[in-house]
Structure formats: C-alpha cells, structure tokens
Amino acid sequence: MNKVTLYELCPEAKDCGIENTEITSVTDDTRSVCKGSVFVCIKGARFDGHNAAKEMLEKGAAAVVVSRDTGCERQIICENTRLMLSILASRFYGNPAQKLKMLAVTGTNGKTTTAHFVKHIINYAGKKCGCIGTAGNDLCGGDIISSLHGTPTTPNAVILYSWLCEMVKNGAEYCVTEASSQALHQYRIGCDSFLAAGFTNLTRDHLDYHGSMENYYEAKKRLFTLCENAVINIDDEYGKMLCGEFSEKCITYSVKSKADYYAEYIRLAPDGAEFMLTAEREKKAFRVKIPMTGIYNVQNALCAVAIASAAGIDTADCVKAFETLEGVDGRMKVVYKGNFTVITDYAHTDDALSKMLSAVRQAARGRVICVFGAAGDRDREKRPLMGKAVEELADMLVITSDNPAHENPDDIIEAVFSGTSGKKPCVKITDRKQAIKYALAGAKKDDVVVLAGKGQEKYQIIGDEYIPFCEAEIVNEIMKERN
Image 1 (cartoon, one colour):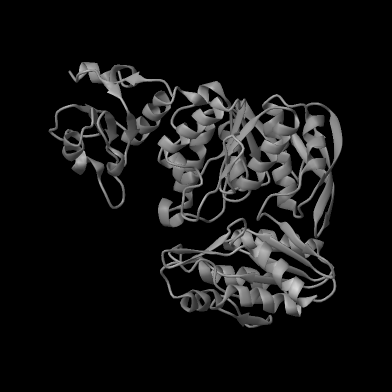
Image 2 (tube, rainbow, N blue to C red; image 1 turned 180 degrees about the vertical axis):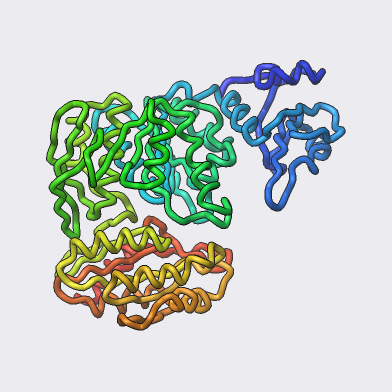
C-alpha cells in the first residue's frame, strides 16, 4: 500500500475546505478509527455511524464521510456512503481490482463450487488466480483464509480491497469472487468492472433481508451492470429474465436445450458425472468428467468453462483441467467410499436440499439416508420446508442439530420435523455426532448417506462458542472404530 493523502483519496475534501493530510486508514468501524483515519458513516439496521461522527473526529479522524449534514467540521457529504466506502477503500489500496482480471459468480446455489472450478481451470492453464468466497479466501500467498459461519460470503469493502491488494503483491493475474446479494445491495464491490460474471440460479433465500424475490433479483442484477460478459443459466426462470435484460453481452449455458455452452448425454454416479459439452460458438464438443455428482454440478461446470473462456482460457484447456480436479470441500464431497458412500454437502435451504437429494437419488443404487438440521438465529420459515423437501427425496431422515447458536436445538429440530408427514422413517437425535453414528450404523450395501448443512465448516456453533466439528474426520473415526 502506497502512502496517500486526503486530497488524493477524496478530492472533494479540498472543496469542503478540509486540510490535506496523510491518511492512515479508511473504515466504517468506530473501533478502528485512529489519527489520520477517514471514517465513513454507514446507517445500518442497529447502528447509525452518523451519530458517532463527532466522536470519531475527536478520536483523531482526518475527515468523516456522511450522507447528511451532521453539523461536524471536516465532513464530506455524498449521496451514498456505502458506495463511497468501496471507492475510498479501492483508492486507499491502490485500485487493485484494476490490476486484476476480475471474475465473479452470483446466484442462490452453486457460487462456491463454480468459483472453485474457475480458479482451478485458470491455475491449470498456468495463470495465478486468487479466490474470495465461502469455502475460503486464497490470496495467492500460500495460506487460505477460512470463512467462519456468520461472516459475509463477500467481505466488507475495506477487507475486500485489502485482500485484492495482497493478491496483486503476490503476483495474481486473475481473481474470482463469490458475489452475494447482500454485498451487491450494500455496494461492497463498488464500481469496478468484471471481465466476466456468472449467474447460477435464484431460489428462495435471504428473504429476511431482501423482503421479496423481486428485491432479491434486483440485488443480483447489479453485478451484470458491472461486467463485460454475462454468463447466464437459461434453465433458470430468473436467468431467462436476466438474459433478456443483458442480451448484448449474454453468454448462455444449459443442460436442457442448445445454448452457447450446453451438456448432453449426462451420466451420473454417486461419486461423479460425465457428459458431452458443446461449445456452440466454436462448433466443438468435448467429453467431460467431474468428481461430483448432480445435474446442477454439470451446470456449475458449464458456467465455469464459459467464464474461464470469456477470460481468455482455451476451452480445450478448461475441459482438461477437470481431469485434475479433486472436488470442492463440502460440496457433494465423497468422504467415505466402501460398502456404502458418505457425502458431505452445504445444502441448508429447502431448494438446495431438493436439488442435492435429487442428484443423489438419480445416482444412488441403494437407499438415500439424509442427516440434516437447520441453523439457529436464521430464517425460521424455511425449517418445515426443509423437513418436507428431505422427506420427499430421502428414504430415511435423521434430523439433528446444525449450528443451533442461541436457540434451543430441540426446538429447531421440532420445527424441521413439523414439515414431515410421517410417511418415511425418521428419527430425531440432538447430538449431531451421534446422529451421524446412527446413520452410518444403519447404512447397507449401495446406500448413500448424505450429511447436509455444514459442508466445509470445521466447527459447530453453540451459543457464542465455535466447537471443533469436522464431519469428514468424524466419519473416518466412526468407520475406523466400526472396522
């Protein structure tokens, strides 16, 4: 990070008669303000930063950025402080997004898998690609920064641009990021241009934040006003709408009909999928094999190939990259394969559970046993819907704790159970480890046991505590004892 003055960071400060000085940080966090900071006042659900503007100046802030007159000295008034926070953070860290080929993926489900696919393809092609998302943040420095439960899929603008700055320092040429609807609505991504952005699908989620599917869609749509190439799933109804609105830069993909990239002759197995990929614009077809089952993972692979191709990677190299792919942690990840198969997956909404279990059902030769629950302190309306979705597609339900947080886990389990009809075998076991043990003990030849909801998480949240809990390790431990 280069030294930057207030006038370089925010030229408007000169017009406001504020003295020029060296800036030490840009922040919207009152705890982070120190001498030389620029404090950006954000009005949130519980706290309005404007109310702390005077205090932050007394604490040593060089200026405060506001969306209304607070009566303070050294204030810079702008229309949208959330957007201004992103712009200032970008400038403070040397505009790193402009030095990278930026790629993004948005949608309700499939963001993490698709982003991981894109990163793998670009790295396979000999390019250095950073990644920001739920399964971890790779700044190309060797270590992966894990994302804890409750932390945003797309981080705060200051963190985001500091990470992009690190990627540039570490020699990255590309960055692929998951773009969540909240991040887009809150302008965490700012106004930077993306070489390509992908849309996976849109189903019910985060309505406690957005209020309606229309608002949810509008938030997602913002990403496509910022990109050069819009890679869109036309199997999804919202994808079709999006394609109509951005037809001049749309690149389509599908598993149901012809598109710019489409899949045919799809074969599913519990541990993977094979298909024929046609790149219509190139008039070429490729046989593809991925280590993850499910039609939606075929869609994710198509989306990744289309994004990487738009970013300059040869389609043949995209396809070859899948030969060295080991899967994505917590996304239809096979953690045990023997007489029966055990898969972990992050599905934690009714729609995600339906899609995931439909994929498993298509590939399984035996029964499907699903261990799942709902997280505490989250959307309560989806809990019975989750129970209903699993009952429709699994042969046996084991309802247990996910991350109960500050709620009574038994109350959550009962809410999930209320969506079931009693037509399928179902047990309720509060202790998740015991629930997994029960499911594995009952598994027979060719069965598939799915551990849903926690995915890549290596902990369980009880109250305010993060208790170590790695499902892959637990399965391994149980099977060792059993054998």
